[in-house]
Image 1 (cartoon, helix red, strand yellow):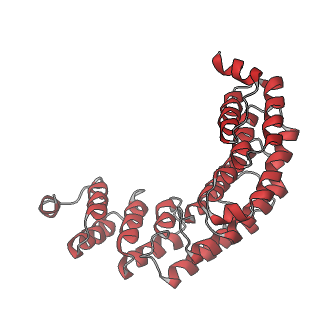
Image 2 (tube, one colour):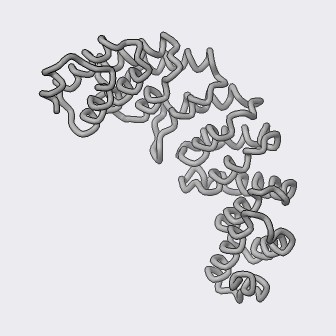
Image 3 (cartoon, rainbow, N blue to C red):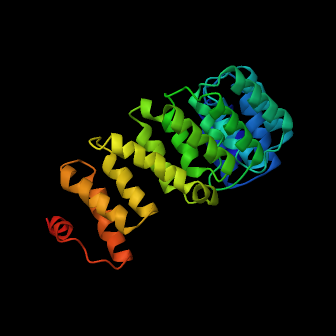
Length: 276
């Protein structure tokens, strides 16, 4: 395939082939191909995708240079470049400085959530995400983006920032339940450290949104986080009143599982409901 690419003029669609090759192998010949394609199609909407793949694979000076160029040109499609920074091969201070400057200029863009690593710590990324959250304490339009950070962050500082954002604007948006569910589902030590605060946020929301279509999910996740006799009782009480809620089955399943976990006799009403 590599020989085939070199034997004919580039087509714009070749970015995808080069990108897939970069993911499966590393070689200077492939890096040269990526550079040649980018020089031939600098304005392609897929240029930043190829740069992102190249950067994630090797973090080379040339790949970094292209990433900085597209960031400085204020390209609308920078997601792949930001995702690439989660790779430990990316270490350029200059690149992080450029990202930081653009974050300050356009802090409300949800795209900055893609700086979030998945299940690992990277101090520079965590610092930028913290800054992004601090600049958006009044922004209730980024729930889905914040939810990504809420689920995957392993940083105590970042999780604390998510909690601060939640307490400030969460109640103002109907999508807030997504952030809550991801905070409750997070498994890192950082999530464990702030578990009581997370649980309190979730309880406050369920108390004021008991009729919400997604309330059952949050109560189910709450019970998973804090399986106590008291919480099982509260869950049963909610289910009795809201069994028609479209997410009520989350609560029913959680009650059954946690009752068995605590070796409790399953409430007869719950048992009957589970048989339907």
